[in-house]
Length: 378
Image (cartoon, rainbow, N blue to C red):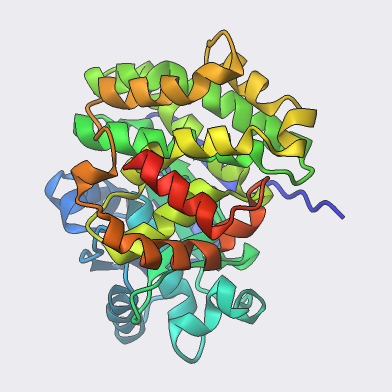
């Protein structure tokens, strides 16, 4: 049985941040906790959100780490409770939005956060008691503003997924203007994250034609504009297209992801300093090649359709095109540049095999397959 769901209310335009107070009032938030990070504050983007909340009482948590942790969730949830907040506004990239989703659970549900992790059978334990959330993305990468999931490093150092339709933000305010000051390196890494989402969801075998169409269009927008946005951060059209690609990739998440993300989630837990989007760019070429043999990918001509969206002449050109794009964007050429070594393989593969994304790859990967993927990405 296919389940198809689209998804939440989205305000998408330059200047949409001005609607933040209105959206809080619409969903019944009278005192939000604003979850963000120090970089967003330092860039002046947080202040734009706070200005839009003028007259509405609020509290701020600005200590989200680059990979959100259970410890950060606990700290923010404590502020939520002591300040008497009744909702959340996440302002930032996927880290801030995922941290806020963790707070939405922790502030309203009993027990440790791990109890609610997907691979621990926790999804049904997340109820409609979750705190309402409005998401304001400041990067064009994760698409967490329209997704039902969050990725958080829990206390035992595993990087786990938390998934529930109750976690979907009540409103996503997608204002490309907030991304105009994003540095080139971060634009490139988060943009490749969005492209990886569009490609992996499109390759996933679940039946969901609307998601396929959304992901394929998102891939076309992201691929055509990531270089422009990286080279000229003030290019408003490119910024808008990249933000749309990010949003679209996440709207298709309900199909599932695959080995790119099972590997990047696991490696991100082994070394939390590594950027998720950069890891996705490293793994994407080898996983595309691996998935080419999947019956569902072949039957639906999925690689050929992706190649067309990317302006390539054949499906076989996709892996090299991704590597070439990463090089032009100034991203690392392989995992070795990031400090990844072969003695880390066992931990990476153990986490990848347990990850929720492993199960939705269109072709089942073995331990040996993961070894080959890591070797070819090194």
